Amino acid sequence: IKTLAVLTSGGDAPGMNAAIRAVVRTAVFYEKRIFGIKRGYDGLIEGDFEELNSKSVKNILNLGGTILKSARSEEFKTEAGQMKAYEQLQKHGVDGLIVIGGNGTFTGAHRFFEAHGVPVIGIPGTIDNDLFGTDYTIGYDTATNTVVDCIDKIRDTASSHNRLFFVEVMGRDSGFIAMNTAVAIGALDVILPEQNKSYEDLFVEIEKGASNKKTSNIVVVAEGNKLGDSFSIANKVREHFPQLDTKVTILGHLQRGGAPSCFDRVTASKLGVAAVEGLLNGRFDVMAGMVDEELTYTFLQQAVMNKAQLDPEMLRISKILAI
Ligand code: F6P
Image 1 (cartoon, helix red, strand yellow):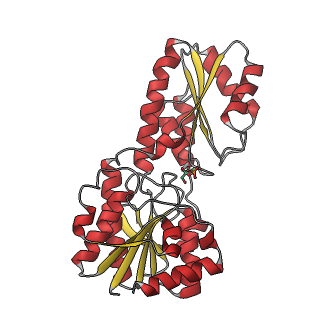
Image 2 (cartoon, rainbow, N blue to C red; image 1 turned 90 degrees about the vertical axis):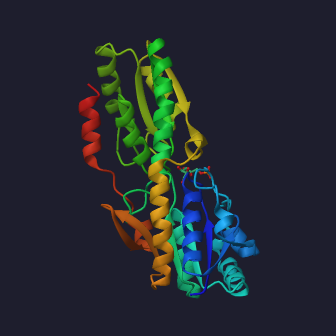
Image 3 (spheres, rainbow, N blue to C red; image 1 turned 45 degrees about the vertical axis):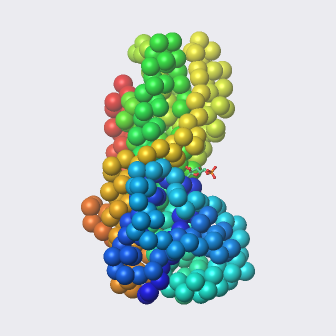
């Protein structure tokens, strides 16, 4: 392998820039050429390449977002799109591709490897933490710290007014952000995609909170839960407990922004180095990840299909502490 290219795809995540920096500097260290591809797979298809060097990535370690920009490409899902992408790599002499992203990014990368044999390696970059084969995805730590900071602020006003708040957090169909932040902010309850929770279950917890005369109650709602969106959940709760002053806050995309935490910067730096070294050592169609502090390579398909599992112990802890 002589020439590498790196792209970011899917939802951006804090720490992606730290990963780009690590990839570029490792490539330079091993005396390889390295291109940055703009706007994910869309830019790959359209030939939006820029050659990078170690100076191109100075002062980006601390920045949120991604300097390469990102996209969710529909065209890359088609054979024609993948063919165009392959031709662009050939044109630029790229013989190794590093993709930073989550589920969709890795699904596309795996198909690309199968169809065209392009040496490809993934770096887990998503706030959702939903990939198998790594304990932490880049961006998750920053996003959860942001959520905790926001809910602490909500707690101030909630307790001043004796209110019940439903706070909706991201995570798509995974409850990692919700579960961990629920413990971190001392939530009354948490509603997760992984649970089959009923309204009766929720009413029991709210009843407990009310009878314990708590001055503020916060329920963390994961966006992909099976009960519904946080406004409809709050409406049902209002019907059942008309005496409670119930509010909803959806944290939304602010969870994806901001400077990456120290942990995310370090993880991104480790995995950036590991991805380039993996490619140079013939590890293709895999994701570089950290499991129990050890560097691991997991097949892209497995990383996506096996899905990271929530620790049931967290739910138990959260219930004990919500008394
Ligand atoms: O995968 C990251 C994520 O932020 C999810 O938590 C969320 O469901 C989704 O992306 C939102 O996507 P978009 O920014 O395209 O609306």
